[in-house]
Figure 1 (tube, rainbow, N blue to C red):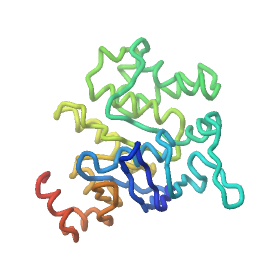
Figure 2 (tube, rainbow, N blue to C red):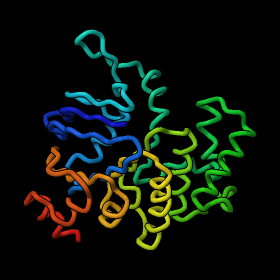
Figure 3 (spheres, rainbow, N blue to C red):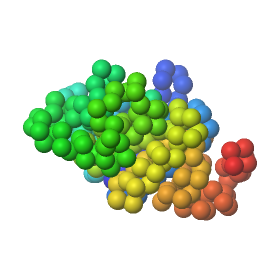
Amino acid sequence: MVHAQGVRKHFGKLEVLKGIDLTVERGQVCCLLGPSGSGKSTFLRCINHLDRVDGGRLAVDGELVGYRQSGLRLHELREKEVAARRRDIGMVFQRFNLFPHMTALDNVMEAPVNVCGVDRTRAKADAQDLLERVGLGDRAGHYPAQLSGGQQQRVAIARALAMKPKLMLFDEPTSALDPELVGDVLDVMRQLASDGMTMVVVTHEIGFAREVGDTAVFMDDGVVVESGDPRQVLVEPQQERTRAFLSKVL
């Protein structure tokens, strides 16, 4: 589903990604771990072309992200073409980014109706089903300000799922939540994983990575230091840098 080969990204003179090689198979959960500034979130944003790669190749479901190939040359797609491909990729951010003037139901309906042209009656029924799926069926008429942080994040997950994505990206989805609210969001993500959704998750939730992840990838300073089965990487890491990081967070 995701294939990265030598992916590089820099902001000015700062090289944030220094040649990332990574493969995520369909139906797998890949957890990206590492200290702040290691390039995890930047790589996640590159997967759906929110950040443009400066080197290497990145493909989702066999299609280059943000580019088309003509001979040996890559040509950047127009924004409209990028947006069309991005529909297949759902993304959940640290902050919930819900429309504050819309109810939970309207937030989930918005993209199917206005981007995909889905009939409002059908979109409303689908949105209600998704809110039920994330445990918020009784909050459909509530506005974001009337919801807890954990509830808002679950609405954000439902909103991403409303586009029926092939791939879900999570950028530290629990980092802005109070500790007692984290569990409900992780439970929704566990259910998505059990349903077979392909997921790439930037997280500091080591327990979630160990329990749910098919692959754990430890990044530092823009490179993949170590990757493999979470029970191997998190319990018996081979690299000293991985061991040093885990000794501080476990």
